[in-house]
Image (cartoon, rainbow, N blue to C red; front, side, top):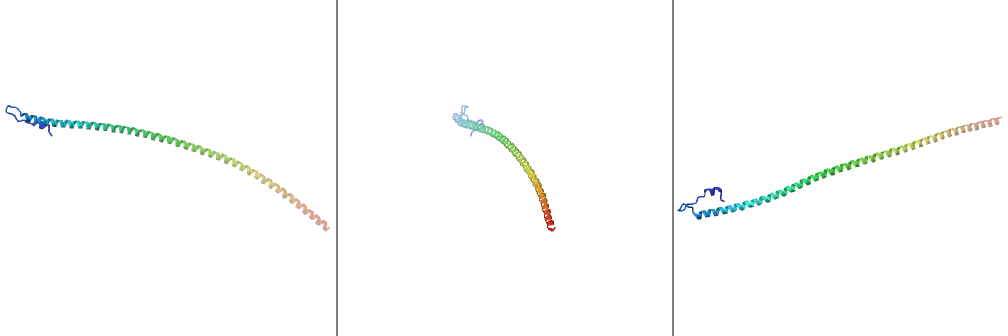
Length: 163
C-alpha cells in the first residue's frame, strides 16, 4: 500500500534530455490511481457503514426512548393501581367497621331488650312467688286454725264423754 512518504520519496530516472522516463511516471501514476481508487472505495464503504451504524443507533435510540416512555407509563399505571387498591382497601375497611359497629349496636339493643324482658320476667316470677308464699301462709294459718278448732272440738267431745 502506498503511503504519502512513498509518493514524496519517489524519484524518477532522468532521460537524456533532463526529463523523466515517461513509462515510469505513467506506471507510478497508474499505481497511485489504483491505490487512490482503492482508498476512495474503502472510504465510501466506511462512510456507508458509518451511515448504517448511525441509522442503527438512531433506531436503538428510538427503541430506548420508547422503552423509557413505556417504563414511565408502567410506573405511573402501577402507582395509579396501587392508589386505587389503597382507596378500595380503605373503603372496605371503613365499610367493615361500619358493619361491625352496626352489628355491635344491634347486639347491644337486642341484649338490652332481652335483659329488660328477663328482668320483667324475674319481677313477675318474684311477685307470683310472693303471692304463692302469701297464699301458702294464709292456707297454713287456715289449716292451723282448722286443726286448732278440730282439736278443740275433739277435746270438747272427750270432755263430754268423760262426764
